[in-house]
Image 1: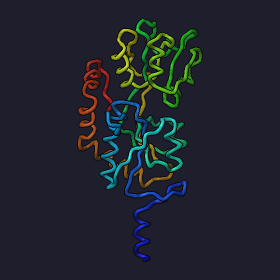
Image 2 (image 1 turned 90 degrees about the vertical axis):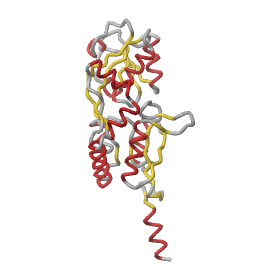
Image 3 (image 1 turned 120 degrees about the vertical axis):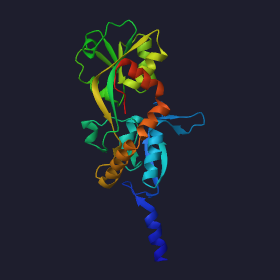
Image 4 (image 1 turned 45 degrees about the vertical axis):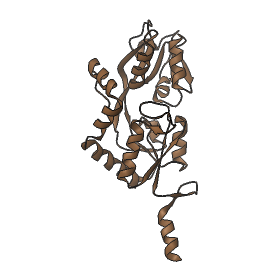
Length: 258
């Protein structure tokens, strides 16, 4: 009986909310609303760059991965309370977030840039921060954080990326502050009403979010990322999910993400 109890204990771990969990499952939180990084396929199953990355990490840790689809601004609270083990959701490692959670080494570099109106007289973030200008940002993103630095422009904070894009498309906002990949996608989808200013005004680094104090897991994640990169894993991800974007970045003379 004692041996059986010890075996059960080895298969379970207790998280901060006191709930016993199967230690063989790696619970990864992400918002499935950011293709091609995090999204759901027609059958409702998670897929994309981050999903593949989470699966490869779980395999390296000899665990099975389970993806939890959570609102972006709920990811950090879910990590802190033990609902998930990790965040892999195109999350930028910022000093503000690092006060609440730990981060792995960066696995991707991107830039904060702008989707602007087709005929808007804007060529820089400084030109955006003017009286009479309106800037859209998605709540909880680094664009939202950056917007606090704007002194003159009116800032509109919205819950959804698509809502921010619509503000620019319909002329209610002069610019949407977001990452390069998304800005490129939305400009291509709305060529009659928008254009992309891809040169970043702020460089950012995405990393895996880890609960404070979980140093053992952080070391394992960092070791995986280093090995995965050295074996060409990120190159494979880029070719599978981001081939057109890689070509667009190359044509614009802008370094690609991985």
